[in-house]
Image (tube, rainbow over all chains, first blue to last red; front, side, top):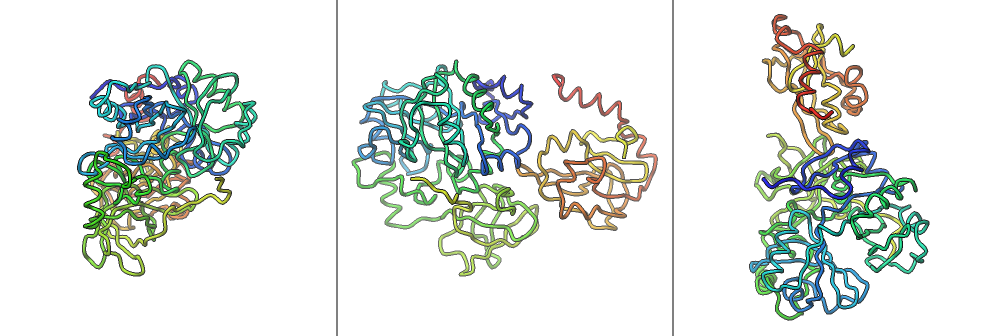
Length: 356
Length: 127
């Protein structure tokens, strides 16, 4: 096991009494006061997240990035973000990433668990990639009150930032790279900046009334929003088509790693498809639980939790295409017992004040 | 229940002299928000160390083991609709079940409050 790493906010988490866990070799807060309370604060008001464990990779090598990612970088406008995939030759997902463009520079945000792998993958093709863990960190501020809070802390008119817009901003006198995006299903911002300012910004948000939220709430929030998590919905044996994320694959663009395999899969059909389900009983299906339809195994659970917003157990999982009955009813095996569940539309939760 | 009058296991269950069983404050904090309790059936016979019930939190699932051998006389039905009682009052309204203790001598082999505290201190030397 590699030595666990800490973000620039580790001491701040300890001061808040966070429960710390090892996540992808990072010592991260899983919760401060309680997952449900933190979750609800984000849905109703404003949650603050340390996302310094995410990999920040910078490059100006358009050609290499274009060849190693699934979405079309040529369609990414200046000061915009694009969801994309780094794939293997089989079309399996090495990582799901966000790519930000500012002029000729690209900032790639990789999952903590994959940052080193993706960085090495890029470096195999080009020397023009830099992984910024030593210099940079990041926080996310999410929820219906996030935008107004950010506005109180900057002179920039944030109404000019639409969803997935990005660009420089001065926040409490600190120069940050801001993006109107997130991983909770709420409106909000993600800020990337020099790690020496981490505490100043973190404390600034807290004193404006943001609630510190750990990885536990981050997971239940993203699950309600139907957002995939690497290692659960996504892995090297799963393609974007199977995960229902073909919007981030542009088969019209020139060659990219995995393109051929995805073209073949699109022609021949997928073997599994991601769906959302609700357990119709008091039990929580977790990753690995098996799904049955009419006594036949049809798939398995990738993520499951109790939804604090909808107040019922939800899960996502892969099933064989066409294996569901018209009513969407399945059985899910939890600790050896079968529980009834039914398919529901993803996302489980959609906010009503969607900005765009 | 008064925490100082209970016996504890290394798996963080407590048991009262009358056979009432619950989980410790440390356990409820470690578990986080409990959202479901899969209660045992009344009458069920258990050996010491066998699974008594299952607690589901948002993040994880966790088993509660019977501290001693016995049979389930009563379960805390309130936990079906209010599982959060386990977090709120782990030594009170968050109790899980009441056992008919088979051999009272088994209680003697469990941790007394001071030994349990010492055990917790060893688990988390920093705290």
